Image 1 (cartoon, rainbow, N blue to C red):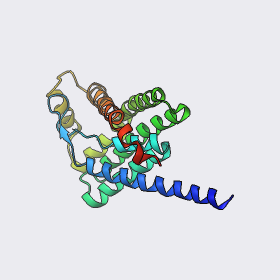
Image 2 (tube, one colour):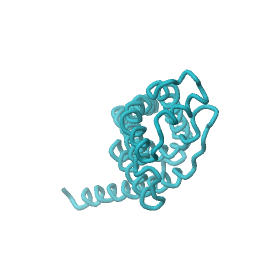
Image 3 (cartoon, helix red, strand yellow):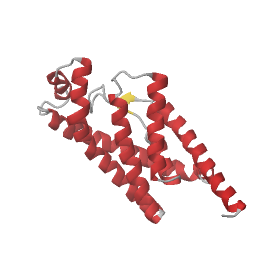
Image 4 (spheres, rainbow, N blue to C red):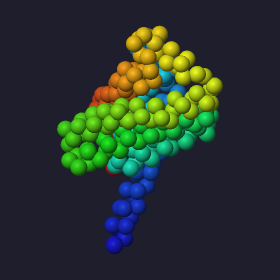
Length: 205
């Protein structure tokens, strides 16, 4: 490999690291910007757009970089902010965000068009929403029962206060968490398509 090719490759790697670091920092800050929607879902579940930077990373740098940004974001949040859930919430955020960003990135980089970006992002949002159900059912909510000492019946009761027909955890997750997670993904997709082009000179060399 010539010196010029080696230099170009190193410059590209440095650029990717710099962009990934920047996006990770932005994602970390966005984790603080969250708010509940109590009329639609229990108030302990909050809406944020911290998955947006990892979606940008997946498109601009590649699917693996989307996962890297998701990991660094949650690592920074755990270290600098601390955890109130014994890292359960951060683990869930990492798993779902990784599925979202990686799926979108893989599909986009097969075609690298606006259409493939939209298909990838929507597929990522759907997959993230679907996977959120078993993750919450088998991992997150049982762990919350142990960590907080709150009976599962009390958690389900928060859902029933909004919709009395939600009489079991699985039904709660399907009626509330699945569409909420999908909506959250859609919001990230819309924002991504609005800001990707203006940010393109920064994201790409």
